[in-house]
Image (cartoon, rainbow, N blue to C red; front, side, top):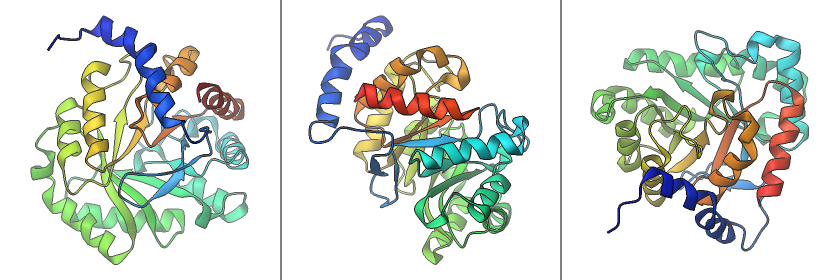
Length: 285
């Protein structure tokens, strides 16, 4: 078999390969940002486009929270009014309290949205405590998706087994609906693609290799593998943490063209960026 180098991969992905995949993806319907998608075999549904809250997020804050509560809630309101029903959070982003306010005082209705959050806990007792705290912080009886955050080692399914058991127990009891990982290395992504425990995997993907676990020609086959194994695949870093914002249209077209990404989360810093992403998705499909 002829080996595909990076330059050839990029050329094909930007052209015929993406166009063919888009034909398959939109053969029976025109995709939009608000198209309802099911995350693999999990049964969890959300809109194709979700609002990310963690651009450069860590230590309890992100670029969006640093803009202040008023701006954060304005962006949430625009996203919800435009039909987005997926909000992507993490303990490290400091976003739970903001979403709680949006659900308590409007406009977000809890039973109409998919809430995804993440934990960096590495001990089972901390996982258990986090799950309880997250529900209090969001004032909700259940969490739709909870992920082990930033898995970077290929042996994470062995190292994290006790934590995974806690999450599995929570899923059986109904306090979370689905579980999974966000990956920060090729080895971790490969392990996630093959793990029976994983319902949902967050994969960093764009056509330029910016802020990803590896070059696109290595990441794309692993996303395909996860998809084929029934995992819900959520694409993140679509704009490379803002570094390729001026090439958002190309990135969205590429990701949609793969035909293996169920949903994507994009971080918005003002309401106009919500409208821009929605327009790019409409144009791409």
